[in-house]
Amino acid sequence: MRLEDSVARCASLLAEAERLLAERAPDGGDEAALRLETLDDALLAAWTAAERARPASRAAAARLEDFLFYRRGLLRRLARSGVRVGPGLLASLFRGSAGRRMFVFVTHACQLRCSYCHVAKDSRRMPDEVVDAGVRLMLRSLRSEVEFHFFGGEPMLAFDAVRRATLLARRLGARAGKTTRFLLTTNGLDLGDDELLFLQEHRFSLEFSCDGARDAQLAQRATAGKGDYYARLSANLARLRGAGVPYVVITVVMPGDAGSLLERFRYLAGLGHRRIQVNYALGSLWDEASRAEFFRQMSEAARWARGEGIEFVNLTASRREPVILNGDLTLDCDGSLFRGPVLFDGALTRSSDGRPLGARSEAARSRSYREVQRLFRADRVERALLPDYYGATPFDNFVSLCRAYRSRPRARAVVLDNVEMGLLSRGLPAL
Image (tube, rainbow, N blue to C red):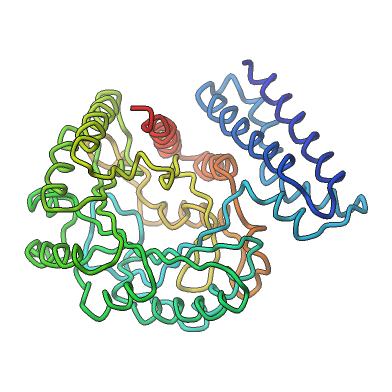
C-alpha cells in the first residue's frame, strides 16, 4: 500500500472511532476501542514504512505526525462538541494505549557497569513523598488492575522504597477494589533472606539478570572495580529456585555474541531454571549477519525449550515488542514522570561489535539527553491526575524518538534498527 493510501486509511479509522464514541457516550464500547487499536497498528506500520523510505516519504511522514497522541485530541473534540465523557468512554478511548504499568526507578545506584545498560549511574534515591505520589497516581487509573515494576539502578539498594510503595499500594488498592501486581528487576547481588520473604509474602514476580556462565557474565556485566562476584551471584540465583517467588532469568545478547545464544540458554536451563527470557541488546546496531544469527539461534532455542519443558518467555503474550517503543509510565527518583524509554537513552550509538558510533563530547550527550527528556516528559507526579491520559502507543514513541534524534542520524538509524528487531520478534511464537 502506498504511504498516501495508508494515511488516508488512518484518517478514515479515526473518523469511524470518533463517531462510535460519540454515539455510545458516555459509556464507550468495545467496537470503538477495537477500531482505535486497529488504527494504532496501521499508524505503526505506516510510520515504519515512512522511515524506511526517507527522504522520499517526507510529505506522507509529516501528515502521519499529525496523529501523534491523537487520543488526547479526540477527547478534547468530543468534550467541546458536548459529548458526555464518562468513565466508560475514557476507558474505551485509552484502552489501547499503555498505562497499566509504572516503572519505578527507586535508585540510580548500582554495583555493576553493564556494557549494554543506558541508565545513568549515581547515588540518587527516591524520597518517600515521591514514592507515595507515584502509588496514589497509579491507583487512580481507569483500569481494574495496575502493576508496579521496580527498577534502577539496582532496586535492592533502595529496598525501603520498594517496601513502602508495596504496602501503600496494597492498602489503597484494596480500598479501591483494584488488583495490584508487583515486579522487580535485579542483578541479584543483594538478594537477602529478608527481601526474599517480603517478595514472597506480597506475591512479587522477579526478573533476575544473568548472562550465562562466568566468562559471559563478567565480560558484559563488570563491577565498577572489575571484581569477580560470580560465586555470590550463583549462590543467590540457586537460593531463588526454592524461595517460592515466581521468577524469570534474563540473558542479554549483544550483536557480536549472537552465536552464543543457544549455549547460554542451555546453560541457564541446566542450572534448573524453568523460565528464561532472551533480550537483544537495545541501543546497538544489529548488522544483517548478527540479526540472522540471532533469530536462527532463537529458533533453535525455542525448539529445544519445547522438548525440555522450559518456558521460553519470549514466546508468551507477556513479551511486548518492539521493546524500545514501550509506552508504560516511568517515575524517576526526583518525581519526574515520563512515558516510555526516556531513561534508557545515552548510548543509542553502538555498532554491531559494541563500539561507540563516533566520538561525542559529554556536553553533546547531555544536550541530546535533555532533548529526549523534553519530548518524553509527561508531568510532575504530584500534579498528574489520571495515569491513563499519559499513556502512549508504539507509534507515539516511535515518532518522538525520531524527532529527538533528527540531528543524530546514526542514533536514529539505531532506533529504526531496534524497532525492526522488535517487529521481527513478534513472529517468534510462530516458530
